[in-house]
Length: 326
Image (tube, rainbow, N blue to C red; front, top):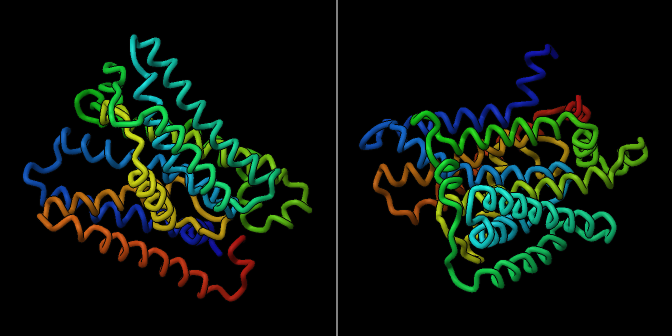
């Protein structure tokens, strides 16, 4: 297998997600009443980045053959916390941001600790902890409200040089500063090994426990980052279980569309980002074509089914399962 073919083979899901998003976004822009303007791009980016961050969060446990059903609740918890403590002066706002992200990382660490040392299934664990995080969010914000530091919020949701959406720059920063170092680290590579075959990884001396702990901790951090960005967009917080559930389910869909295997050991957070962009663009397409929003679940289901089918076709075509790991 040539190097080019090898790369195409291993990045097929990512390339498919990028191509699908490019096609859909082109159709969206071509049919938008004002075309692609800085305001249109910023609006689309601000919505898409929220799901992209939560999808990145979901990717990390999935790589270890887990599933985090609490990412939506951590997302909402961070939103409620930010609306209460990311206020005041710019300095106070920055301290509040650090506290929100720290709380998200702590929530993720607790998930990982229970999975690793409690030896419970990730789905059951995160379903239970998600309910706890939602309860804390509801305690902080019994009703919608709050505020956020306006200078920081305006900067995070505006346009750089009046053209490039700042939200995309922030997302790129997360990829460069969080995902890429993690992907190339010892524990990042260990997460792939754990997802491929946990028993074999353990027997080979791979730090299984530390790999899982870091994956869940970073998942909580990224989900909290998404909740923080939501606060910057809305200037308020709301402990909404439907919103949390919607983001959790869509994060799983984005992971699959982006080419990450739910069986672990295969995929990329970058693919999940483009999977999130695809899901958000469906909503935008319904708007420009003036279609009933009730059609959105149907189109999302079709796209998700197509992505799953392509992944299954890839597995059926291999003659030797070892080809998956070549």
